[in-house]
Length: 544
Image 1 (cartoon, one colour):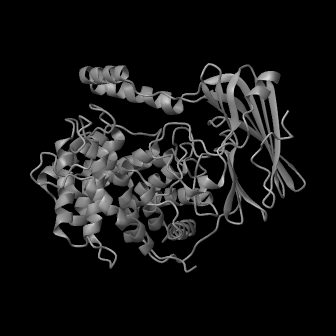
Image 2: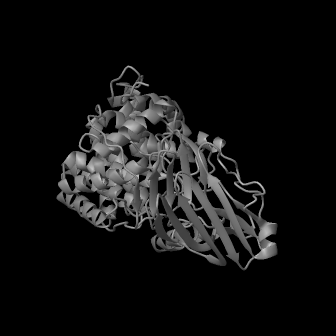
């Protein structure tokens, strides 16, 4: 197969602009002219508009700007006018403190403000336009973003930094430039020596590529040496987690995402061989119909489509690339094992979830224990915070992962909860918004609620893979399995369908609840080999 050039980004992105434009209110006489939140302006099932949907303005600006035989939108005046209308609508929905809302009224969301401000400012710079009301709106965004850092979810902090630098370019106000460099500094200080940025306690592949995107755009405009050093560490880490079949990431990351945002990687590819390797692999995956903007829902199409168009704009022929070696990252627990027989990726600090590839194809995906207790509680071994040990013997290496099963949050909104949240936000506004966000973040993502059930996963790696799972403790199960695909925490940009899901079974085992309930413990043993894959386990003889 001929190595694809950067046009592959346009091949996958441009057909989606028709869908994107269908989300926008393009009626110039409408009071919601420019709005991309179709649930608000068209279906009218929401009473506020999501500010992040207006990031789509940047896609329109890029489509208007880029001359290419594949691009029917180039130079079309309506594209420019619709872009400016999107930014004008963003002005109309801005909160008084310069922020925007995404999930509920009076949210004052840092991430929404950072990402919308970046996209809006980038669009104006690209179009060489400075509408006074839009520049004023972005200035208010900048003042809001200067007030705090977000270091638990660092991609948001880097988005704010890149937005602030763009606002500086539009306004020539030094405080925004100073604020941008300050956020870059705090973000890089929080970067792990392994190269990743914190995403709720660990590295996540998709969100790290988002961080790389924003950091790379900052570097592209400033040529800052510290930003470049941080980028090189990040793309070196990322380069280990694009798989032989062209997929990337998954449940072994802290937030379970399996996409790679390409534009920052393409910027880095001109100065770093690991980024060059990533860029080549991403292009090849897209050419082979891998994960692309077509797989995104409408919400994230607005948020991510422009990254693919930007990737075309930023790409050049990859001059050099370096294929990564096997590695164990002790801090994060991520292990990439490459042998003649297989390629394996596992997170030893997340219950030992793993993926195995043979001959370039996925042959095993294991997301650990998933069970429902008799009281209805869903529990899993797939949670950040497990411990592991390593022991080598001859040509084999054994990893032992230990931890407790954790409760899986399954909260849903109800009419009563909605009424209480809305009422509290209306009365308390900013204070209640911060309180609600922290509470939701804890309940849906970061909180660890252990149950008295203890597991051990033993991975013995040689020419094949031997897996021993043990479970013991107090509790009665209504259902108990090992599962192949299970994203269990709340992450908005996860759980999109991948064609590789069809190559693995829903469960790796029959229901093991009766076996555990009878004995109060469980032991499962199996081998994974490329030629005769021994999973899934159906009434496994090694179970006792």
